Amino acid sequence: MDERPTLFTGARLVDPASGRDELVDVLVVGETIEAVGLGLDAEGADTIDCAGLILAPGLVDLHTHLREPGFEHKETVETGTRAAAAGGFTAVSSMANTDPVTDHAGIVAEIRDKAAAAGLCDVFPVGAITKGLAGESIAELGEMVEAGVRVFSDDGNCVPSSRVLRNAMIYAKAFGDEVVIADHCEDPSLVEGGQMHEGAHSYSLGLAGRPAEAEELVVARDLALARATGGRLHVCHLSSARAVELIRRAKAEGIRVTAEVTPHHLVFTHDDLVTYDTNLKVNPPIRTTEDRDALREGVADGTIDVIATDHAPHAVEEKEAEFDLSPPGTIGLETALAAVLTHLVRPGIVPLARALEAMTVTPARILGAAGHGGPIAAGRPANLVVFHPEEGWVAEAPFVSKARNSAFLGRELGGRVRHTMLRGTFTVAEGKVTR
Ligand SMILES: [Zn+2]
Image (cartoon, rainbow, N blue to C red):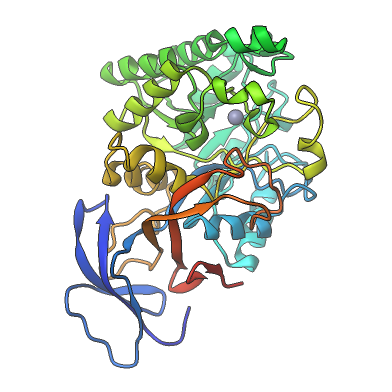
């Protein structure tokens, strides 16, 4: 924490947890928010003029690949959490496809310790559903729940066996009503070898496709299993219009499901892939304009609960390979907020408070990250972001992340992080990472 109190003055507070949207001052003393109101005065405080800026809860990412242990040439806990801080995040959830796989409590503790040592962003490791991500026997869920894990996923892989997924849901539920099984929903037998959305462009480019049905089938299966078991299901990175509709109906039916979408699926369409830009090669693939528009509508009406980055760093040489050899994934932590502000909020597709809800309070609730996501109120931990809602910039390498495989590389964005504060300590000040 910083020694002197910090007084943010004249900020527009947008706090989805409390519903507040008003001009305020915010006083932070030590690790804690001391007061929120207008005309606050604090002797000896460092004053940060926030006129024209928005102050919100620190962002929370439900889907980050930090790559450590095992793939430190792509990213580490330290570089990934630094990128997160730069993007306005105070908490991220790290996926389990590490090496060794995060399928037991020892790795969970190792990742948390590394994050604590870096002091840039809280990390909530996701545990694997199956041992070694092999899709066969269930991992040590109980041990990991005991270690504080709330979300389990084999992400990167779909859980191919319906029986295994059903058992995992039953097993997870026994460890607590809040434990979530999160699935990467693509039928492996339909997407094997696939490079992009199966459709007009995959045919004309001569690339093997990944059909939307691969997602629809697994989403439908998972919803049926969630209904049957009463377990909590989270659907990772939705990409297709029909899957959004399946989630909408399931929610109306009372099935316990939440869903997420990435900024890149909300912004791009497969038309953008005709240049063979490997940074737009992602799983599940970026699809048609109709799909993208359905995803946007899903965020607006709350069918899709969360906007999550699926930050997937790769080494430069890996992504510079030919399209069919390059690994799927885009980084996203540093551009997520700006992408959402530019492409959803500014055009009036999603209100600012709803967009921030999907990036703060809702992912924090799913993760059980009680100190994150707001509300911004006296006595709460000072986990904050302050950003300019429109300031223009171009996403360019080098990034704070070790990687540079950004779908937004070279593109103009509007909206920029000025300050990020983690428990009273600036991790970003005046747009620069502090450590
Ligand atoms: Zn995935």
